[in-house]
Image 1 (tube, helix red, strand yellow):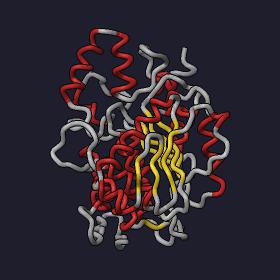
Image 2 (cartoon, rainbow, N blue to C red; image 1 turned 180 degrees about the vertical axis):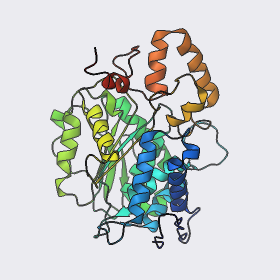
Image 3 (cartoon, one colour; image 1 turned 90 degrees about the vertical axis):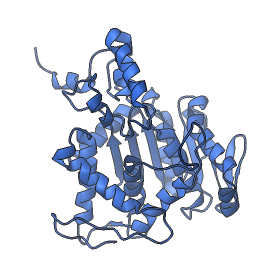
Length: 364
């Protein structure tokens, strides 16, 4: 790890051998940009707080946790070796963008004294078409092949089997299209599972009914579109099954939704408290990409706060089209706010911003 300087001294991470890029440095510079007043228009308060947390942790001395450049770079390098599985791209393999690199480096770079991951819980919330599923598919394959876990079970759950396949299918296609991955780790893609001969593990979708999910011993539990879970049963079943794993990971991805008494909004509220320093939870990483209070939803300049890869995915043209429709229709505006700008609302087609509504409690 690079030597930590004073608060005004920038950290320089030494690149490790045989990596495409110095991912830890990219993540660090993303965090510096996020907390800078100069770039406040690009990053909302949650991203700024998550970035400041990482920067503050890097400055701590004689702390329980240590940042490992090697582990951070390894996961990014692994995922950039994976192929695109749909669309037309300039390169045959994935190129991670700074927001994705930041997430990966923080989650996999921070280590406990025993060398295992510091973070066991991850909550990522951003607008639709932010490549959450593709990134998560890469994480699933990395944890299957590279974490030195014996018999890792990587399970993917959602409210429906089709939704769970939004993560499983990209991982399956990545394996099918990458002969080097198959040869290096003995990975095979089957109709309903992905197996790894080297680790003895597998990736598999699970039934959405929590009552049928006893007996799993997951290394990684992935829940897609957590906002759609009306009940917390599946979340609790997976969390409780981690008992015998020393290096578990609960990885939740979602867009905003409408269910305020569900597990997703509960976890979002917890992330809010952690980032604001109201709850100390060194095991929990959370980041939320959304607009700040007072932002004009129809102003293209603020859309990047909810869509950190705007221009790549989604395209600016598509966002402009959705905005035109939203301005003309209340129902379209509700969908635009919730799914394209990641703003929680009271109901489908609703106009009430939940964060603004909470501020009005008690007022006449």
